Image (tube, rainbow, N blue to C red; front, side, top):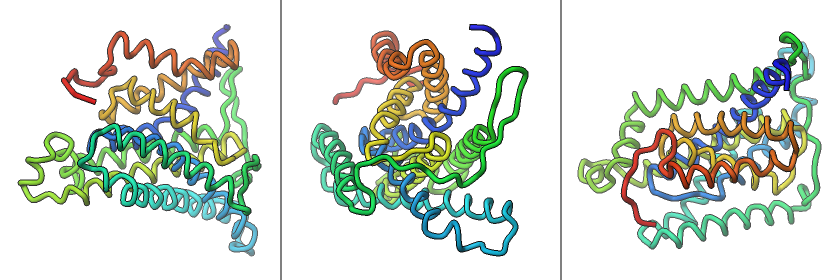
Length: 309
């Protein structure tokens, strides 16, 4: 590869890594609070994509009639972001309330199997809906694509949107976790649930907010993925969900900065591998998972602790 190709793949990797990071943050937050690997998280991403698709299809062409095109585009994009976050957050809360909460004090394996069941239910349920179906759909062009040359490499306005939205939400999450009351409660629960309960913290409220934030981030990741790679279908969350989980493990499951670092490493590794061979690109995440588990199972930024499955 020449330098221009390397630069292009780095840009592509940062764009893909931004989407993975938003999904991985939900994985790592939920695991940090209740030690659950929520394999349905990729499906919250899918629901966010369909929510924004439905919003744009329903109101995109009529709501802003008479406004200048650039203003209408910005307003519609903001509405799509809020809609995808609301849909992802809502389905995450519902899954927690009806599927995970009853198993809170059961063996961890029960919750893990239930998470797989929730994932399969959502995928097949959406496939069975007449208004959605199992087929691929083209995602609407909410924002017109523009290209910007950087040397002999090229980035698009979608790159700027994906990275900008992801970084903004990561900064917002950092501020919430470090400086708000609910953030301090989340940190307390992640460190010692029993002690936090004795201090008067409502554990279930903290868990609900954690699912809400994680689901909302996955939902907006679905919107960004639909915009960037414009096709959606009910099973679209399977591979991105698994790869985001690998990214969280790579960075250190339960560690928020680790999830972000692992996601960008994963995105760049995948784009470089795909440039060599598309099949290698699909499998590189799982090769990385095996290496991490063999060499540093706690992840790059994770702490080595004794824990039973």
